Amino acid sequence: MIPSDFDYSGLVRPIREDIIHIDIPIPHVLRNVNLYLFLGREPALIDAGPFHPFLAEVVEGALRYAGSSRLSYLYLTHSHIDHFGSADRIRRSTGAVVAAHRYEAPRIERVRSRLRREYRCYADLSAALGFPKEVSDSVFSIAHRWIELSEPCPLGLKLEGGERVPAGDRLLEVVHTPGHTAGHLCFYEPEEGILFSGDHLMRSITPNPELYCPPRQGRLTGLPQFISSLERLKDMRVETAYPGHGRPISNVRRRIDFNILHHRKRLEKTEEAVMEGWRTVWEVALRLFPQVRDKPPDVDHFLALKEALGHLLILEEGGRVRRREEDGVWRFEPATARPN
Image (tube, rainbow, N blue to C red; front, side):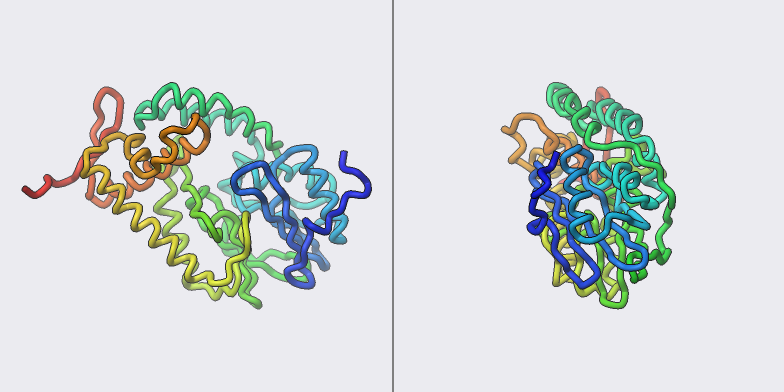
């Protein structure tokens, strides 16, 4: 229960007269989740934050403090629990129609059963990736903690990308930016060139690509989609991007170019690792992210594994490495022999 005299002024800040930033602290290395409230004829909120009774109360109190206890719409950028976990509670308390890309519907509407299925799939795939069983067992044994940070939420509006949707007195263009998840959305306000970029574009980190388990349209990784989505943003006039975590991005084109270059360099380092003799996905992950080697098993080990897998599969598709299976483990080798 939040005290009646709780001071919301440190969490609620206008970024325009009719657009309010709500800063929700979370116990995670990312430190916060950014929500964006649009005031006007059809009040709307972008993202909901993770589900926890205390955090949900903070969001509801912040909405009241900002002057909008009722919402017409709640737009979700994607189906990760830190962005949609409290959506159903907000829907019930504000009357909002909840909207997300249709690809995100299974996770959002049936989150607990869907995540259990995905975590089982990840665990089953781990052996092929060379992920040590003791590390895999430890990482996936805490999956229930993540599952508990969300509640299932019915979607009242399933988006595709390309729509124009109301938010306060403005219209936002829905931009489908797959990669971090299959149905990740950004919301673009064209009059002022404002992009609400979710986890697709952030100021200080590059998002982790999705691991599609089971494969989606024949693909295991969302990394190629993520890079293509970044390229598409180059064609948009974006003056400022407001991300799902961290501070706003003022030089948006520079950040996009940096992220594309970052993955180009990581592809080179991944190919170097294979040339040096690192063969399994986990071995390459340790080469790329040596900081996880001596850490107790946690989600960072899985994120490193996903990142390495994404880059190895791009190299394989481009004919720069080849994959073979040995005793149930994928092993990656240079596609051509090294010169003498």
